[in-house]
Length: 183
Image (cartoon, one colour):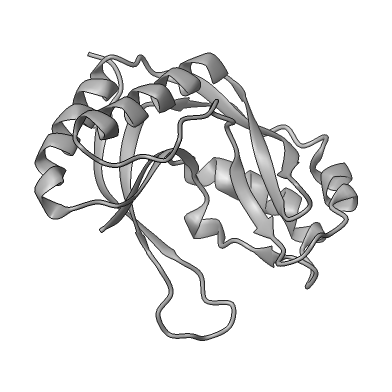
């Protein structure tokens, strides 16, 4: 199954961001569904069923070693000229450490992980198949400041890719396990 470790924002944070994004939505970008908004900590891709028990145990340990932390949605950024995202503020060092621990847990469980790189906290809002001027979107979301919330758990999420072939169909995300942060 296709998996990733994530921080799932609460419904109130999603609603605040949705309100800020609503006036910017247009047909120039493919917008992600609000129900799927999350902060990926460690993308694992296809994980063999036999690795799941050890992966779950190691992610549980990673969660207990990480204390809860405050986070809020904040501003916007981009990757190249094809991906627009909302940023985060607050306990970014704690979030980066949680991402490191989730990545290490997956590696130690035998999941072949992509090359390691510095974690950039982001929540993907939209993508484009071609280079796009993202400046108007960045200007519209730049001043956005969400309300702070407490990140209290680490989630293991299954990504169900679209299979119908219907244009615009998006992946569906399903939390398959979650562990509270801290002791």
